[in-house]
Length: 256
Image (cartoon, rainbow, N blue to C red; front, side, top):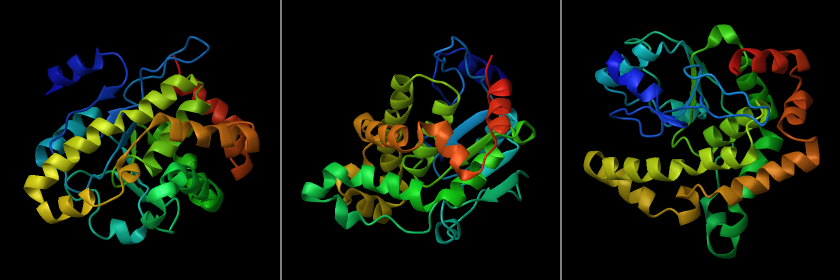
């Protein structure tokens, strides 16, 4: 197992960690900043749901040394299953970004064009306290290695990942590329569900295409909104109450 993980670590960004029952588990390390630094590997991970993990998956997380799990799902979603801390102890935090469920009826027809933009800006506007709590954990060096996740690892996780990468100085093109990689994971997750849970797979197939997509232009609109309203991701986090020193410290231990 150790040899396999070392082999993966030599690959260029992004570093995807193959698991049996999670399909969007990726290391955010490896991306380069505009200042010619690089994000350290093995410190921050993003993922889809982690409550179905197999014993083999947990062995992989043990090799990675995961210390903290931040669950971005709502309390109701988390009630369907949480990270198996009884098998692999971690510091587990359930920090819902927003308790208002997405209204998929808005993703049909003409509404599809603006659906992601409206949903993400809703989260940023109405989920400020949840986002503050999440980043208060993410910037802590003693919490790492940390993984944060939601259900598909696309929307809430994608938004947190994008803000993280922007604060660390990763160029926007790479931030958008990281977001779009979820498309492959979504296809694999649906294929797995078709054999393991056909009913759930059928329900997912009925969702509007934009709900399952991860098109970079949709995230680009949201990041432009952050630029216009807050001067960027860092300005947004500062408006939530995070201290400039916290973000500077975050960059100091995450960049090499």
